[in-house]
Length: 199
Image: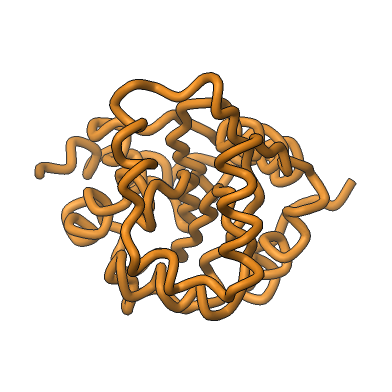
């Protein structure tokens, strides 16, 4: 995939001011977008919704945040970014990922996501799992079958208590979206040297 913004990166480097952080998010039910707004308000960073064309803008920034949601263990649309790190000029940038879902966070589950999504190039502390929301009464038809046939591998990746919570949330719904959940995400940015004006 061709990066359309090679020259734009040089122009941006010559400009004074502006954010050096870009947040690209993919959202379907609004949870990922809600976190994107909170992050943007805090960092003062630039934000764009995901599409393949927008990924080219990553070459213009030093820090890239990719926000998405988890579907049956997959970080949706992250595979496109992963396969094109060099094309998008991201291989030498600071890349951070936040993923929204309804599975309770645990180190065991996080390790499963790393392996399943082939994230060996990403420092583990740069993936932050955030609580999302799910309404069983408003599920897109294309996802109903996937939910009913949830693979054993994904369930095995969860501690027994997490499996119980996950099944319960699928059945009755769940809304865990909250701004305070971003605290470890901001810490991962600070640990990597990303700076912003604290409010």
